[in-house]
Length: 310
Ligand code: TA6
Image (tube, rainbow, N blue to C red; front, side):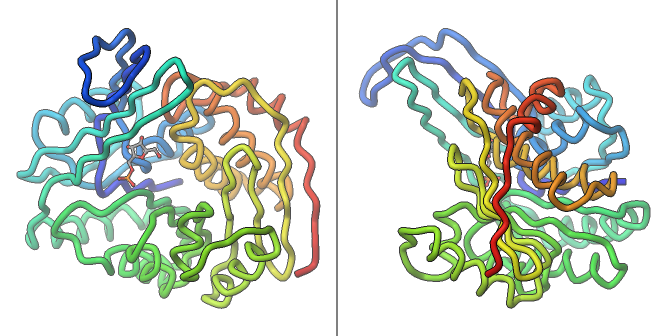
């Protein structure tokens, strides 16, 4: 089973606004509210392929209830820790010029007691899970070492832990050697402390990350696909171009593809294709964190992988 962790979930509010500019008043033409936060986007894509899944994290207030109702409607198993704070919203404003502007709230302040209660819940839920996916930012009140501690517990029980976050939470999480991380180019530059301008520099930077005893390093490159590093090889994944409607959540969908592939025991290169195809298929959908299985299958057939010794 896959356990997804969303410590800072969100109601993702997506607006389509023609001619969007700052300092003006607009009426949104198309509004969508979805249970979001990176981990819940991952969750909803996993659900497209398998029911062997449970979602956890912190949830609070009316926004939290909205999210739990939506997950119930989607028949997604969940067991969140209720907190006093209010679960946040994240806004994505899309416009006819193809732009998308995101405004991400910080999320609620989590108390020490709530953190302790979550750790007990996590230790319960992890028993039945082979793969753990933790994605997204930390809400206020959580120590920057939170992911590092969760990974250490998972590794002590030989569970595979996939971590998709950024900044110091990622840097510290890496110290516990998660099974897979997926920094995008910006996150990779922050990790190595310098600008990256070529694929050679990506390779060099990723090799440093592999030294943390991380099994798989995925550097997601948006429309350029991704470069995956594992056991002394770099795999450049070339994805066929797709009609992009909304690319928000594509990185999360890629994580879902890796989790599903690990659970199903797919061979390594097929896993790369599934993950990259999920990312591309998500961009074809208006809804964040959604893929159409037929699109995933068609994209897989169009993917080629270049394998290089590093
Ligand atoms: O990756 C897209 C997205 O998950 C949005 O749906 C929004 O929820 C945002 O990222 C949250 O990011 P964060 O890193 O704060 O968890």
